[in-house]
Amino acid sequence: MRRPTLLALLGSVSLLSACIVEAPGGASPNERRQAVVSQVPPLSVRNGANFEDKVELVAATVQPGRIAPNEGARVTAYFKVLKPLEEDYMIFVHVEDAEGRAERLNVDHKPAGGLYPTTQWKPGETVKDEFNIVLPPGSAARALNLWVGFWDPKTDARLQLKNPDAVRNDGRSRVLLAQVPVAQP
Image (cartoon, helix red, strand yellow):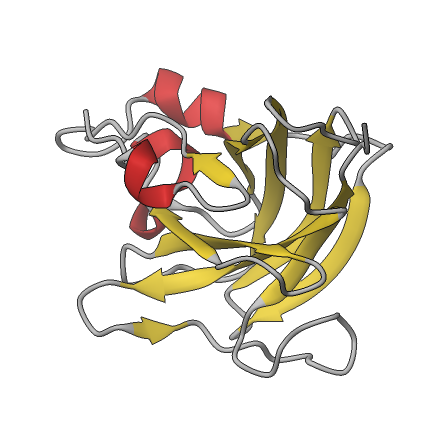
């Protein structure tokens, strides 16, 4: 099991990724059932970002919807598979202070906790990816921007956003998944 070093990640926010587990020979039927959903929760933030006509970021949920210093939130992103993917992409998550006062944290992780690689995704499925964000004590952030995208660690290339005019993005195939308000003391 590989975990990011928290001390190296601490700034105004800290991100704990889901436990990454290698699935020898691919995902088992049970692991696939855990990673695929038949319906996106109705109270989710809808998105619609299209990555190279292969994957659509359908929606996301953040529970709770507001975090406080020394507390965390569970984030779930829902990706609809449009076409088979030939590479095992990582999902990158960049957590940034919405006002730009703190250093960005980069946490790249394998989708679905490492249980269901993108080369096994099947068109028509909706894959859920879950991770936690934790705000350290004393953080002055008022809101956190969560940016996501797909990254190939072999080539250092990202899946390119096909519909940049339809979704909030930074022009570099990073899509705003959510802005999470921070409770002020």
